[in-house]
Image (tube, rainbow, N blue to C red; front, side, top):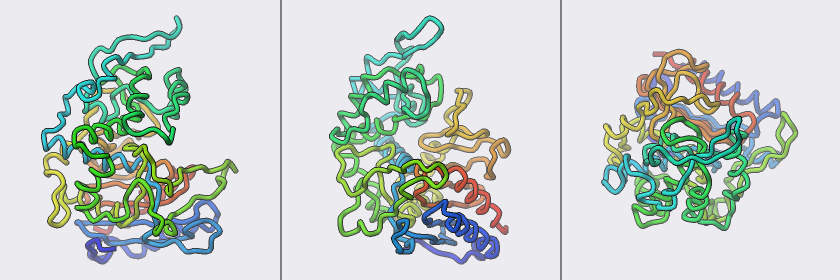
Length: 392
């Protein structure tokens, strides 16, 4: 790992408390609830602690390695959101742009309304904007976040079809009704998949090509991509075949297959070192070393709350938080059940990966696991014990 380093003590971290954190992760492994993990804490722009525990793949006898490659799922979203804001800085896209200006299929979108009188469609009160997509107020959704008619139609729409490309997926989404009027409610959604298509249209490149040229390459994120090349497939971290709590089968996507659909909302593979470089860039105000991706002011704008009074009761967004342009943003020192300072921002992936950046404490942290059903407990463990280790 070539990230800039400091010692834990120089970074204001208590080594004894870090040992407790390492022990807590090892306990999860010993109890059979976690196959393996890698974790990182950074302060003041430098990596101050990393830890590797468990096995790369359950039962394989191969120890977890620091360069293990993980499915990061929705931790793809912040990277694609940064890509969009780079194009905003280039004035190739504007946040106020109606989505239909770039994707005309969305000009005919309707909102599906369910009430006592039945199900009906209503016209949009205003168009979806690029800002709506970034902050999840577009009216788009995911099938797994609700049980209404829109969610059922999403489940039936073959949005996971591997033969589609980004353009086809955007067309399929445009043919579905919205769950809410644009700008009226926060709902976690496939909006970042649509943003991935906007990157393609604005840049003239595929999403993967743009990310490589403008973000991954410049930051030295050498192992981050939409698939894992054959020579590196021995480094893929795997989950348990069955969930240790419920016994249900655990099914994650196959990262060995080269996808036609490059999901801006959840398709990337990455490593702790690679994502650590992305976090160092964020913690550095848009710059890592001599490479600047975004201006400091643009990043501050992204990590401000963009919801205000827009309702956002949802399991994915804790109390005391709003949402910026690609990140959940802490708005209150209290209310949330986990520690953190106002102005900190975070996100994670459905298989358990997680990160946050806390500018007030000059802190960033990341944990990579493949344990979907244990993710909430593991994130709470990691967040709580990282803050407990701060010694200044």
